Length: 431
Image 1 (tube, rainbow, N blue to C red):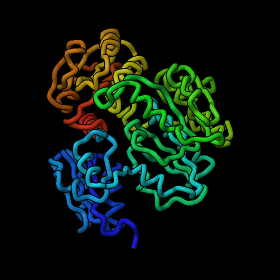
Image 2 (image 1 turned 90 degrees about the vertical axis):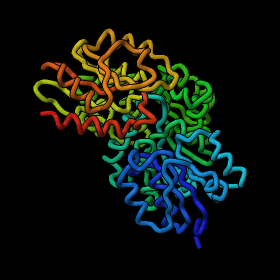
Image 3 (image 1 turned 180 degrees about the horizontal axis):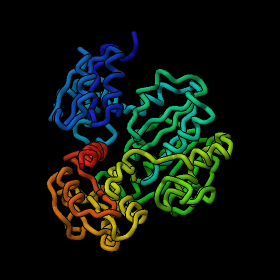
């Protein structure tokens, strides 16, 4: 009998991603013949339909939506916590008081691969981590082919491919601060930290707490491991003093020029430089690194060119949930030819710099509802994404760019990936 058979397991937070941590954990434990309860505060309308279909195929999974029930947590043997659940959650405390084991999908993953000779490359930081993670993955595939896997905060829980892993395989993972907070018995052979900017201050009590979670990526590294740090970020550069690993610094890449790549913005040269350092450690020939970088067209939802129609370009930058992300997006596009779709809810991050950049560069501002809008310049108010796209199209002229880069969260209404899907659907309807 496996150790999870007949255990009472509560998956706290199904999430919106079809291959995310919630659904992956639910399916993992269901296949282990545990008695699984999936509970999410959102209703079925706000969750992924395909995930719900998969769950309903298992008789040993029960679904509780729109609420968390105290009894489920009091009676559980194991709680699998969604990364966004705060550590001080009253439901987690109930489970702990009743001696339940608190797990995460990444915790399960590291337990599974322990002593299995799987190389783990982790990338964290406030901005740039998704792009760097994906570039590294694409470069490594040149040499290592089907021995390279991509996962983590980028939308695919490693539980999805964990059972396929063999000795010598490589996993490249984007790791968010929430995920790092819960990791204890983890080990990254190569870790990358991009930058530290004020973020998630609705979750963390201070920037120090946020940074401490980021630093957890190298906590269990040793002298045989590698830590790659952005030397132009003061906070990140100072982390070298706390690490036991081999330190490599990176700055803006001089290996390629902006006009030679598809990616927009000076910040892309930092992302390329970080990926380059990892590739060299992994002994990838320079010609393969450069050719991959030059052919890399970006990551979905991050300054992604969706369409050009009647001379108007539509960019999906939905994962811009931080004002700095919107700032660099605006700086990458022609001034005063931008129609920006923004607005939303604050994470207690100052918005003055973003507002200044909007005034300087944006032709028309369209605002989705939210509690942060009073901190931004006056714009056209809309109720939903469909109205936003329609308003942007009505005001656009040939040569303009319609940019969907809120710089804010739209939670609890909708998460960034789901809002990106809706934006893209509406853009493609325009005729």
